[in-house]
Amino acid sequence: MSVLNKIHFLKRDEGRSFWFLGTLMTLKVSGETTDNAFSLIEQVAPVGFAPPRHVHHAEDETFYILEGEVTYFAGEKTIHAPAGSFIHLPRDVPHSFRVDGSAPAHLLQSTYPAGLENFFIELGVPTDDLVLPLPASLDMTQQGVQKLLELAPKYQLEIVGPPPGAS
Image (tube, rainbow, N blue to C red; front, side, top):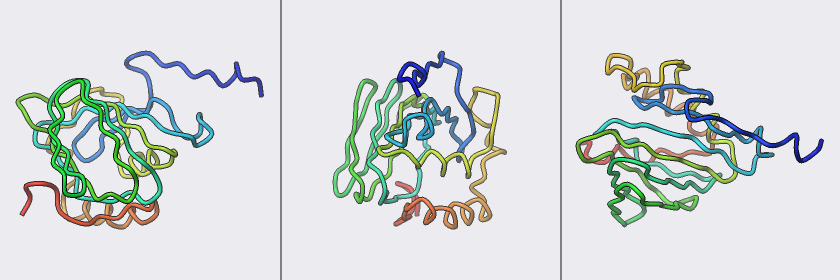
């Protein structure tokens, strides 16, 4: 295959979109396109969103904050990340984050190598609506949490604690 045939281009509102635990994710490039080198997801997350503390055993993860404020909890560090911030989280470091401030966070999330995007897709709900899901559509019920816990090992993802601020 010619290198020119591997060029990948998407406009602002293009990509495969899905709701994931109350956020809007749009897959911009997957491992399928990058020969599993990396993936890139554009994410919008509401104020207060925080995933469970977890460890990636298969990939490094990076975030670039386009808008909003996010606090990262990585290992023993707490890092306040306003818009324009970049953070690299190597694999095997327990971490989480929380969206702070008064507006949703808009960020770019990459994983190296690719593969974790399939976890988000498998757990998420496909959507053509490029807006945050309504609170009623959040699947953080016992059934949703159970599905997350069952799916995590398949992607070498270990859940090691509750979201920041949860009791």
